[in-house]
Image (cartoon, rainbow, N blue to C red; front, top):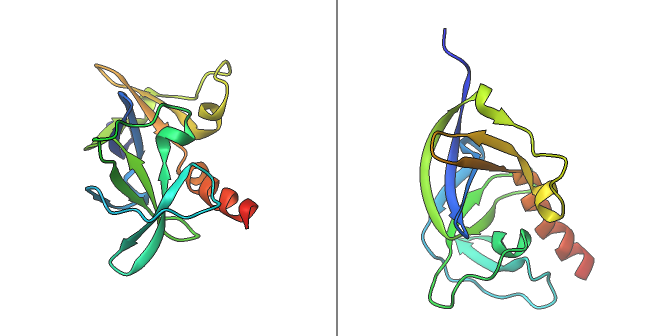
Length: 151
């Protein structure tokens, strides 16, 4: 009997390898035109029209305290499902769907500080690198909290 495994949709953000549970992903899309919204947190880049559904576009680089992407580099969208509805995570590059063994998972170290501590569920040790598992609830909640605070 093999060890239990999980599937993750992966993406690259400022050279780091992230994953989100595949069952929470609605779809992945190339760059979509973003309409800026005044008076919201800089984490929320704006709104996108997804086949008639208006959803918030959350810039993960800003949320994690990473530098902004270059002017010419267009973000890709990972459309996530949540209880409150869909939202987009803006990432640099879309990766593959991978399957990882449950026994290669480790919780984030207690020494981790700042925004990253609340945003990471843990890491999977892969043969060539670490897969950082993003807490999608936290990512989605940040856009909703900031929007409410400004209202």
